[in-house]
Structures are given as structure tokens and as C-alpha cells.
Length: 266
Image (tube, rainbow, N blue to C red; front, side, top):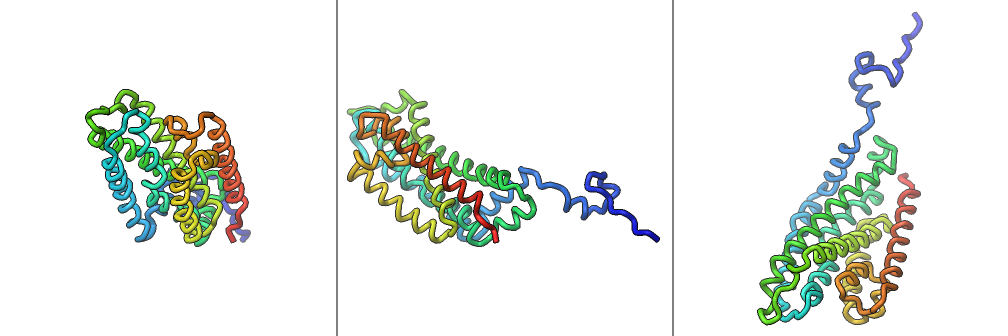
């Protein structure tokens, strides 16, 4: 008896075994996004950081904003919130770094790409996770700014940010996005979670110090330069530092994306 030919992939599932049909089905993009969110809280340390991160962000923001009492202009009242963009979400950024850099260190990207070989879909699924973390950080910082700043403003100067809420929201969202991008670049360039975290936790304090010690020099390479300029806090009265900073960090982002797309999984 001649062997029965195998059914083609395009045949309906009734003519194939359920296991064969499930194996040949392509995973949906929503399923990939769910997988990446599970990876975000995949270990006990990740869950601890996800609990501590928002507490650090909100607690540090409330503490720092409550210390400032005399702020004469709207830019002065917004300045503490802009400075907090550098450090307030550092714990949540660490969770992202562990997710992205750890994928290549522990080869956890390998089974994902074996099930779904498209790297573009894989990167887009991770981008959804990054977008969710950015929106959460930005929303938390905006809420704290609008709640705490009026209470810490001296009665003589008055609270001024409620006259331009759109401007405040735009500055904080742009600055939060820039901070997340810097963490993302580090995690993509260094395929080792411990190494990427060491670099990030070393660079962030240095950047915060340089922004206060040598602002006229640092603004040219500051990832937050667009937000600082939009807030009216730039030490250089020119848009040139914004273009220089954007060129630098967008170039690093393109380089890191190219490096990840060419990285070997073996």
C-alpha cells in the first residue's frame, strides 16, 4: 500500500490533526505582546522592582517638589519636575534594561524567535512594553507635579503652572520619553543585564551632576535637551543644542537597533 500523502499547510484544520494545526498556526501579535509583558515580570526580582519602582518615582518626586518654596516664574516652578525626569523613574528603567539586555544574555529571545521568526514583530512587541512603561512614568510625574507643586509654592509668588497645563504636560512627556530612550539605548548596545545596569546606574548620576555643574557644556549632549529647552530652562539661548542632542541620541538609537538586528542568537 502506498503511503498516504501529508496534507498541505493550506488545508483546513479538519483534515489535519489538532496538534499539527496548532504548530503551524502563526502566533498573533497580541500574543507576542502578552509574552513580553510576562517577561517584564518574569522573576521575583522583576516583580520586586515593579512594586518599588512606582513608589520610588512618586515618593522621590513628592519629596523633591515639596522642598522648593520660592519659585517666581512658571519655568522656575517647572524646573524641579524637569530635573526629576533624570532620576525619578530609574528603577522602572532598570526593569526595562533587565528585560531587553537579559534577552540576549540568557538567550530567552531564542525560543521566541523560533516560534515566530520575524524580528520586526518581536521588536514591535517589545516596543509596546517600552511604550507602556513610558506612559506610566509620564502620567505619574505629571500627576505628582500638578498635585505637589501648588502646595509647595510660596503664596507670594503664586501657582502659575495651571495657566499652561498643555505646556507642562508636553515638557514632562517629552522629557520622560527622552529618559526612557537613553535607558533603551544602553540595554540594546550592551547584551548583558548586569553590565547594562552598571553602565546605566553609573551614567545617570554623572549626567545629573553635570547638568548642575556645567550646564552650558552638558546641554549639547543632554538627552533631555529638547524638554529642557521647551521648558525655557536651557542655559544656551539657541536651538543648536537641541539639534546636536537629537542627532547624537537618534544616531545612537539607530546604531543600537542595527546592532540588535544583526546580533547572533546562538
